[in-house]
Amino acid sequence: MKYLLDEKCSLPPKLRTKSENTMDFISQSFKYLLPLLERSPDLHYLSTHAHRALVSRNVFFIGGMNGNFIAHETNAYSNPTLFTAVDLLYGRDFMIKCIQDTERYLSNGNLYKLMLFVLMFSSNCSIVVFNDEEDLKIMSTSIELICMQNIYVTMLWKYLVYLYGYNGAAIHFSLLVKNVLDMFVRAEEVLKNLTYNTLIDRVAIEAEHSLIIAD
Image (cartoon, rainbow, N blue to C red; front, side):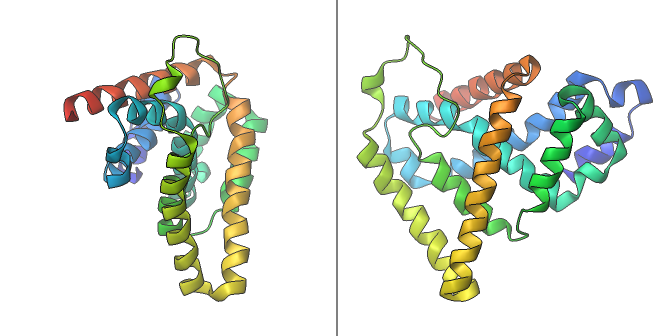
């Protein structure tokens, strides 16, 4: 992502803030996430239809969290080119809130990788939008997903206890939950952006195509 950011900054001034280029840059945080999630054997225990449903429902939210962590690690929002480009898409108030959110992120990437798997096995961790064309019978039961989710919650908790002790683990787990809640608020705001919705639809379709090829 640092390389892509440098590449974006090297473009001619008029192209640096072009919305298409900015969305292509943002989409990378979603695309790079999919190979990580695909490594989970639990995901492959699900039926192909349930597998696709989880990706299409949750990729928006977990991709956003992944993007926030990348922004935190690369200090991306301090880059004037990126700040200006994203500001044009979402507005100054939204950008300031995103910066405040990322400042609360922890520096241990392993914690966020585990949290992303926890969220991946939610039946739906994005804003609920009813789709009358979706066959609800193809989705795994909530109990099945909770059992898978519990595996990653347990891994995350034991890792936190190993790093920080019991009391420290409780504090850091609360911080992770706060990051998730912040992301829910930003997700509701960003869904009003038509350009972003187009991006998410495109990423979800690409993810489904990758699953078809894998099958």
